[in-house]
Length: 223
Image 1 (cartoon, rainbow, N blue to C red):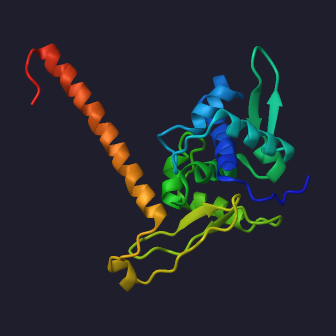
Image 2 (cartoon, rainbow, N blue to C red; image 1 turned 90 degrees about the vertical axis):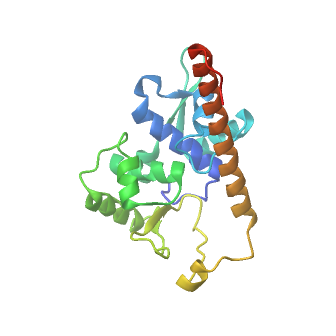
Image 3 (cartoon, one colour; image 1 turned 135 degrees about the vertical axis):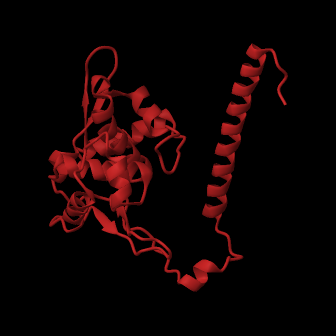
């Protein structure tokens, strides 16, 4: 098939990313069952954004990816299992797949962040090695799979982003505008703040539970 892909949805890239990640991190459980794949898609850690996809939505994403040959389904035992087919379809090495996987799962990142986050998928010797593979992905003859984003005000490194879901929307901001708080808060920013608050509240609740149990075991009253 052609290596020029149609634009994938966020869930489709999440499904693809989870399959590529779990192949390296839990090889004994790979290929994945639908339940394992669903859990990986809705995982709260190491995911940006955090999702709450339904089983039906994941099945629909699998059907779309299967039509593009990006995944293969195998039968065995009591449940069907799914594996990715990224290297064969896109004609890229495993090092590039590791970088693409982290970008699909965690969003835009610098080369330094990618080197750290890819540790369990592939150990890059240094940041220069990461940048070399990113540049190859960007200059790919059949169409770039990643793009280097403009440097943000105050940042030392540029971030990279995958292009499987289309070109990213880049907002140009000057140093002056970045330093001046804006009165126009977007819906996305509000949603992100609410998500962060909810996450912090959940963590506080868990810590209170731990403190309560420790106090009970020690026979002291919780403050």
